[in-house]
Length: 310
Length: 265
Image (cartoon, rainbow over all chains, first blue to last red):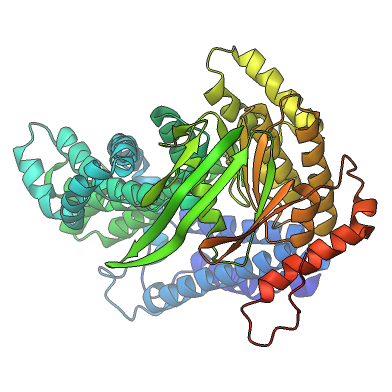
């Protein structure tokens, strides 16, 4: 019992807590947010430790994933500790370029209205762009992949266009478009559409020959073939592709926002780096990471909820 | 009456400009209601022949006739059961069957299609598993669903490509009896072309065995155990053992150290 409490993450947690409550070489903003984050991570760790830890006779798989949870928590705390020691405690590095974590997390308290607005705005653009791009890419890819003549014409073209990163033409599209919103949706759409199209053509063209024979021997018409066989067959690759596209979209969006927006997560990071407020830059980066992870979790949830086979 | 006629059929596969013969001058006539087993060593072209009958591929020379009409693609009069991949993973058992039924009976309401499908699943003993997905069923059960679909589609010709090849012995025997049952009960008997590499299975099931040696039909043997389909009686009979030894010797006849003396019939 006591040994469990004194696992490495918990020891690191108490050291960090001590640092957060005391003042070091560098004066910081209010540390409450940092303490809340630390405690949140530690509470999560302790709860899972009680639920899945070896002492509670969890099965092998649960114990293994708990081991990695413990390792990950330890690594997060260790990095935080190293950061706090070099910045806040001993002040070894420039406090402008390397802000103490207390200041980074304080930003979430200070700036949350801006951040929320940024999230809403960025998510709107990402969902519109990735949504339309995926639907279009899948629909066109399904048809093009299935009809050999179309495939042989479109695939080489798509190959070339998909190879050009959306980042390259983003500035141009932003410059040409009437509004920034339209421009970023369009850039994200393109950045999502072409790779999805390529992916989909690949899925269909490379579909298992035995599966196709089986479907053909049932005399399925084209519509049934496309929507009852090839589309469900491609669901897993489509979802895998979607994950990459969401991450990509955030990259494109952040970049686009840096050029021509006055709201959004990318804009937030860009603006504060112009003012050399790097604690806000760090906070923005963390926020983007959390949002992308949350979207990926959502996709996973959707997958588990609605796909009942395999 | 000749149901299926294979006339002078040759097939060559093209691979990088080189052509490999897969079948050479095959001639075969199968009558209405016959249960024909095609056996032969791996690569002898038996699966290729079945794909030709289904119309998934076409011969480079000669022609395949069904009811005196040349085969130009998959048709509603034929249905294939493969060894693998017969079922779609994203449909439940009954949806898999219904999808097949829908293709051959467009005029039926979805309730009628559902009834036919349910009935077919009942026949193969899977009435309680209608709403399970393939991954929830064992290999033998999946193959039963595939057979149920084949029967529900009510084709005149049932083509089976090693359907029991990947199934354990006990289930295989059950499925063999089930297949014979379902085919025998039918008033106008289905024509069945069944591919296997299992000699015992072929003798037990078939009215006629076609042995293919690389690319050609090497032997064509009529099987007649009368009306009796009692497995133990058939397997113990002298006729069965003689057939078995003969067929096994055919598999070995190209080997230099032939441990099996060629056993004449």
